[in-house]
Length: 309
Image (tube, rainbow, N blue to C red):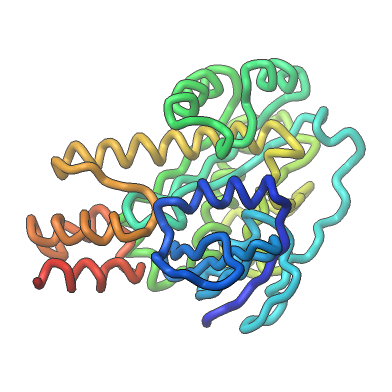
């Protein structure tokens, strides 16, 4: 079902979005807009007033990465619900955090990481520069990820495109992420047992009620001490650590794909992705393409048209 979500962002967040969606821009001149971009099946229209409109089946998932939804249409309970207030001094507690990367990129996997940061490690990670991965360069992310992995327990799940394409008809984008977050958290809790985190913080990508609805169909459901908040890395370094490990794994997988295909594989879902996908089609048809991309994205049909010319 197509959805429309509207958020209001600060000038600082707008600058970050402007940079983040640079590769996904559409060549459109819409009055009073900063930019128009398309990621997968979601169109993003950012207005100079600070309002940003997300439209498409994955609008909710994409919008909640940047802020709370002001208004939404097309799905029940789709506006982001505020989570219960976080415990006092949350940033100084022993917390298990989780985040994911790659959901909006045509090429490459979806990577989900859960990381446990004991309160005794919080200051050390911050001193190392562990923060929002959007503020770091790709080389910094890869370097920091290697350091974090030596310091804290983590569980990383990587869903390669081939596996993603097998799962996707059964699981929509939100359901798939719920399943992956739940599994990563469950596996990490088992690994660190008998230690129990004081809280589990998920970087919010869907309303809490929606998450709980989807997780009911999963085995090994984790439900205790769960908190959901957008931009979770600002509230605890555990989410920042998980985000960096996820991002590094995603970048490393893209690099691996580039080497295997003998051509530079882009992140995102813009026009560059269409052109590279067309080259892959010319090289080995749909069979080869299905190993490297998320086939349900609109890019597949665009690539077919380019390849047929």
